[in-house]
Length: 106
Image 1 (cartoon, rainbow, N blue to C red):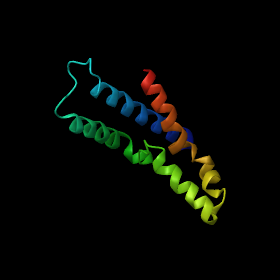
Image 2: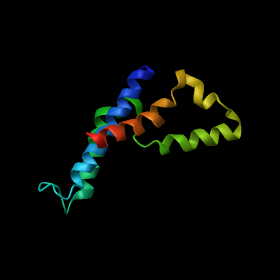
Image 3: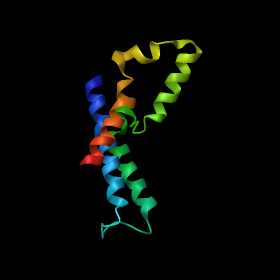
Image 4: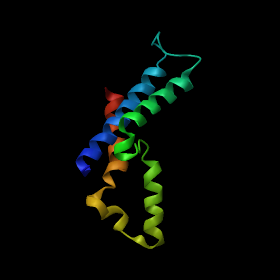
């Protein structure tokens, strides 16, 4: 999978996550679960993992990738953690942020 396809996969996964969370927790939604909200959220994350997990390991949270990259850059790997694999760091850091914004707007 190339970087553009991985970027779209992360963007789509985070967009679906935010849309699902906003739908589940909406107070004006009469079909929103009240007693089983954690189960519904888990099902949304499971669906994203099953659908998109094999491609990029669904890093739908940029904090999961940014912290280790900064730590590795500080301990001696330098800028290699950001430029390797055709600047792949855009995929797990920037794509979820843009996907969350787009999902919230939609």
